[in-house]
Length: 327
Image (cartoon, rainbow, N blue to C red):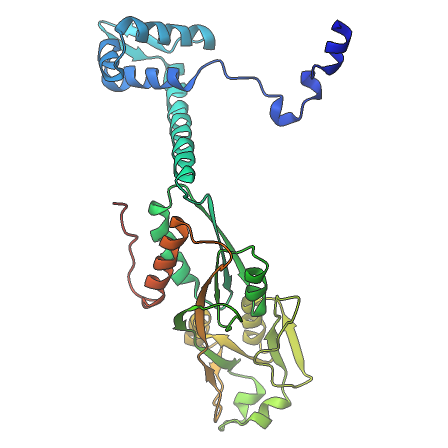
């Protein structure tokens, strides 16, 4: 029987690394007791705050010192004073106790239906400044809820939402079967380097002028039905993976492109890029929409984030901003 038991009993060296960790000698309650002694000025005061006897508090701290093998407190007159080692350990313990408390709070919120995570997928053309403001305001209200933000281009947003791996989505497309909340528009303008051949014509440009020139387009990140939004049909087309890359190429004199104004404001001011004087279609203003996963009810954290995204969507991008304090 003993041989069979030894075969079945897991040995420490056979356990996965995450389970083969030495158990802590000191409990969170012991660390809280030490913190109370230091914060309130002595054993008697700590005992009153913790609703325990003074002898119990004294024993707890003495037991800690034995378990750790280092002195934590020394008696200076009638007052308990931290040793150097005690000061170091106390500082580390405060973060430990705080994290444990946050973990317990998160478990409580999850029990009440509060989400552990909100998954947000956004078209890369949507202004980051609006997202930053909404997420900054969300943080003090999040109760530990994480946000997983994912950027896609064009139909990539729709695919992620339809696959069910996003709770919220921001896209400029009308997604079949979904009723989106209308957000603001994003201005795209046709630009090229000031020395580009199109600008050297020094006249109003027409569609035919563009057909013979290299156009830089951004690759649709969708895999099922990628779209060529904005492509004029010219064979002189370079496809890049991001709006930032497109801006860098066009700013270096390689072709022209329609780019979001908010992303190239500095390049326009510095003369690196210049708007093309098109007779029509020089600027576009697609409307963006906020969608929710219709197969999953919105939890309280997701609902809060929806309201914040809608609120900060209408704020001017250059307006002063301060995150609201938690109530």
